[in-house]
Length: 423
Ligand code: ASP
Ligand code: MG
Image (cartoon, rainbow, N blue to C red; front, side, top):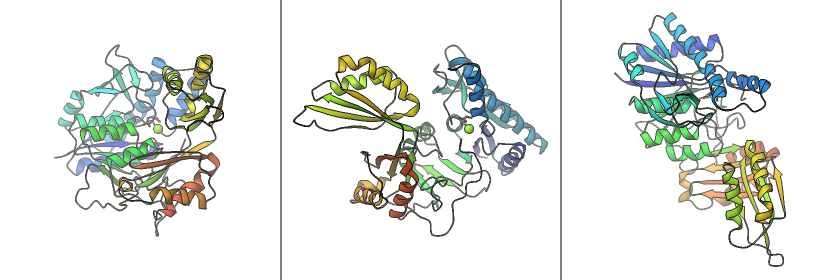
């Protein structure tokens, strides 16, 4: 008898019908002879609605009470799902993250899991129950406060439980049929990937692909838990994410795994920076002290005539204000001329381990953008990724052009998006 962890996202449990559909799927897995642990997200856009509500009563909600509020969303779905399963004649018990033994650090709103002690879950499934666990939440080791893991954190809950329970697989059920070669909401001809390595999946997640969270993939790689991403609507076989392809898992795209895009970042340009040692250090120390995470950084040598250079970097839009304030405060000591802030940018990334050994990928990428009339503002690369920053307005066209240029368009079927408001 195998142990399966299944995770259902918000769009899969968006309403009573959805919950009943999920209950059937869970019961099927149980009937097939598995022990089943289910992790659920909040119904539909519940988390966003709770955030809206909090903002109406207090302009900067954060911390302990905010977490207490947000975890309510997942509790609603876990209880409803347990009821729906019982209605199908099977035993189910729901557990909060805390009851399930998800222990975190004390950083409210984006806590990290530091331990999982799933004793109660183990007992429950050994007694023959289906255990339902509220995703996205835990309890802090110090202080015993309720914490949340950051947006989309239910995936991480699922993988962490799968690792702690030594599950065979962590199935992530979502509103698309798997991981695609591009966002199927943008590229109709995107193809479902049959198998992808943890390595490429990590780069896609870091580059804006929203189907799996970076932290979740990182966790799965660390504990070597294969993830099967699939749709709760179609039940088709989805995408396997693991170290090595198993059995008949196909490795279709030898060079390029996919194209990801991200419109959640902004660009800061520090204009007129003296070209001498310590300047970049001072700029990024100021940013770091403000606890802002940066992404791409670009600097050129100074023009000989001025001895001044510009440094540009990208960061999440949500952190833009903090970064600008921090730099303004340090302006006197750093000695740059001015700051420019631009939140109308997009990042487009091409990912694939095959590019390490295949020349011409960078040239092909830039040619595709040029043919589409898209201007490149910043470039950065890793061994298995090339990213560019462009105007936000160009993003959809750019992604489609690159997808076509690298032969990733499917020649038959259109990618289906089954649900979700994309909020
Ligand atoms: N409900 C939370 C969110 O919307 C967690 C999740 O969906 O994974 O971010
Ligand atoms: Mg959600």
